[in-house]
Image (cartoon, rainbow, N blue to C red; front, side, top):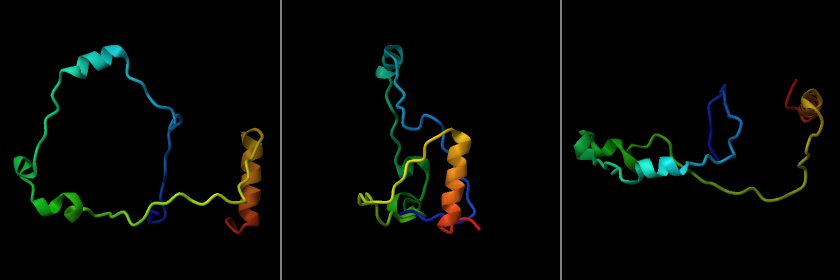
Length: 96
């Protein structure tokens, strides 16, 4: 998985799993537009600064976790779910 230095802030917008669809008008507007392609020499960049050679972050491994026991869906209104989550985190040692 990826490692992040702590403390960190993660922000997820609502609707993250909802695809956005382009209308027919938008598709027609961009249908004839050519997308420019630039090489390293066109941009005046050293080849060792881009791609795998210049990457500051490298993917080590991606995996799909094995299905298992222990998942629990919290139900109720927002305050109830928050209270249950805090209780569970305290019980598991996640909060002091």
